[in-house]
Image 1: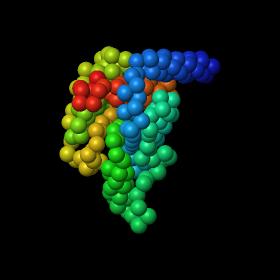
Image 2: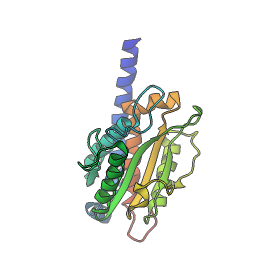
Image 3: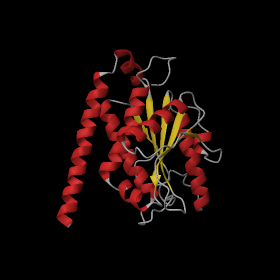
Image 4: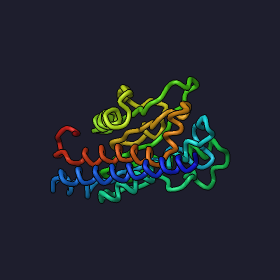
Amino acid sequence: MKDRKKRLRFMGLLLAVFLLCLGAVLLLEHRSAPAFARMEEQTLIIDPGHGGEDGGAVSVSGQLESEINLSIALQLDQLMGFYGVHTMLTREEDCSIHDQDAQTIREKKVSDLHNRVARVNGVENATLISIHQNSYPNQRYHGTQVFYGDGAGSQALARKIQETIHTSLDPQNTRKPQHIQSSVYLMNHITCRAVLTECGFLSNPEEDRLLQEKAYQMKLAMVLGACYVCSEETEEGGSLI
């Protein structure tokens, strides 16, 4: 049984690598010179939600949201490096980015959010992709949900990501992108194009298992990365994809 599981994981990783290479070839073949020049001037900010003492939601199997967020974010960062995209991670390990004088968990969380906002707003020509996981008391809910901020192009990028999730990963997912709630501090205090992706429900046993698989994390990263790269191929002033 263990050998069979190892073989399945190995095959999953091989599939992910194959899809990665195929996607890269297809995208690079269709990238125009003007689009490439614009990408040189852009920065993709990848934000793994939570971190450190703020672990976020806890899955039904006991996995912390912050760790899954970071794993997907790191894979997205590596993928974008393959495309030659400028990136910045708000965190690169399972830690909070609060100020040293923050003492309580609440103070650390508030400081962490303020620092993330400052980092994002300090980058010109940026796009933010914030990575999170969902949770709900009823275990039957599942599927990726994309939210968008107020920055120009945010809704279009969210729509493309949601549609690509539906066509390439989860045909049963008929969710529509939604405007971000006013309670989400980071997304409501930045000015750039921004989307927040709730990759799945940690409260759903099957999706919890999927979200912990490196091959599935890579597929999610590929969707996010491909949608971002394609969004930069349109002419300035044109529609997003």
